[in-house]
Length: 242
Image (cartoon, rainbow, N blue to C red):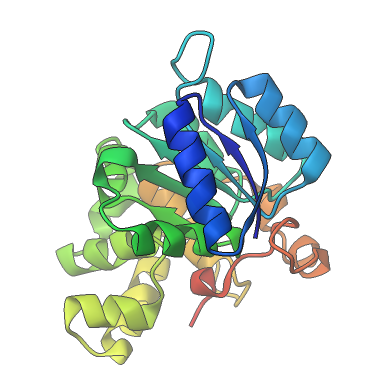
């Protein structure tokens, strides 16, 4: 993968870069502030960007704002946010902007394999959300979720983390057929479109996080016309109806 990193901590940035390149990836640029990241992203058009939330000068939310700015110019640019805390407002906006989004908490990334799995998932157009980030975002979730049973909420939470039906079945120790039934009930209870548009999993996750829908990004014709290279907004197979 071709990667751009936005991280102001030199030790973390260099360590992350060395690890990724040792595994055969190409780190195109390491940036320390929001403007430099946007410039690098537009210049290199990476397969995925790894972005810290807190960047100079105020160390508040510059990183995630920069990710949104970059995606305005490069729709569908895969972004994996790596942060020490959950920034509710802009995290919701980033997730609502389309697929190819991840949000991991630094203190909770315990295994390199888990980080790499999340990075590959996001680069392929999927989602990878830390369960704790999902919990905090869900704390102010939307009212339609009250229609879901506890099991359906568990399934939807795992969908938000980017897991497919077979993975959810393994984690819940149920059959894949049972998961498929739960997913169908979720779609119905959240009043999602019945047609097989390939986007209902994405819409369900947005409803789960209480994020506003962006219909322009959800149109089937536009999605089918987009290039399948992870930069054109085509949803990853994990987010498609199964």
